[in-house]
Image 1: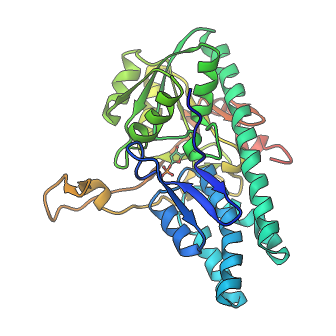
Image 2 (image 1 turned 180 degrees about the vertical axis):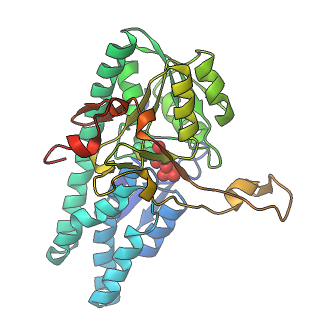
Length: 345
Ligand SMILES: CSC[C@H]1O[C@H](OP(=O)(O)O)[C@H](O)[C@@H]1O
């Protein structure tokens, strides 16, 4: 069993990011020592996934402080740089939350900010282990203590977090208990986080999986080939409406039609308690080229437009369970995150 290279790692000198744009073919890193490089890495999905973005954002403030000292920035220039990090991608609430967590420490300097960012990273890994265990417990109680066939969408694994993963953390825990028969991995167009990243993680962990076109998910569920779906999240509203990778809503609708549970695995840091419902989630619109080309080759005629929302919102009534690091909320039964958030979470 191969361990995962961390998606995000503070080297003391800078932030080392595993370059997820070249996986699975190449394992390469981007070392970040300035804000421009970090913002570019976030926008190109070198680093991606809500919790990983939160950690990168927090370290990004330390990087901005060091760059300000090198370049002689004034306070306004420093604040503008921090804002660029915070706003590099709009949907995952964790990015802004990570920046906001360390902002009050900026006056104490880069080392203090980096130490708090490291604490956030360590908390995320611990939280993901708890999510995995609590999620596996709930699933095996709900579906019976037997090997299961799980459908996933996008990548909510170690690569999307500080380690272990949220949705894939649940899958890893089920596998550790001998309770995974098969994982159906939605390839997740247009950037293929499923086939390139989730399949890479599962193969390295020795977890049986099969990559499928996104369009296969409904029939996989309605034919009874999968027992449930487990997905991550980028922003969860107080009522339980859940923003996640585009295509998640289709998986949720298919789960409902098939009578299969839809399990969302996410830390409390992904819950936006200030957002009453999913109507206010900012949905990132990404470049047309991601839809109209692959490896630089056109996948559509020249001049054709593209519609490329990176996320969709699944209504709370379709979310069977939200697994957090402190417990499981049966959202579609009325247990909403806004009402259940622990004091500290
Ligand atoms: C554990 S959060 C992972 C979440 O983030 C992904 O989006 P992206 O690859 O664009 O950063 C996707 O929505 C995953 O479910």
